[in-house]
Length: 62
Image (cartoon, rainbow, N blue to C red):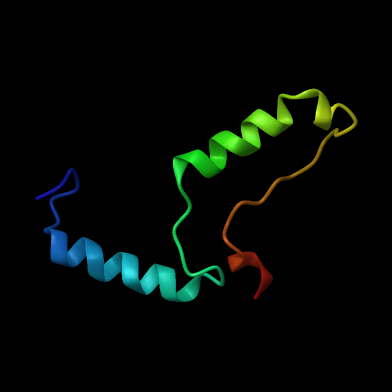
């Protein structure tokens, strides 16, 4: 059992359903968010203001 009381087979089943719906066919990772935070904190993003950054693997496209 994991933190939410589900066995591994149930968790895998849920993840498979979610991944099938994500256009990129993968789950986001903490590293993906960290890279975006790093970019937004860098001088490369100095001209960005008030932007919404959606990191959903393309789910919001359709």
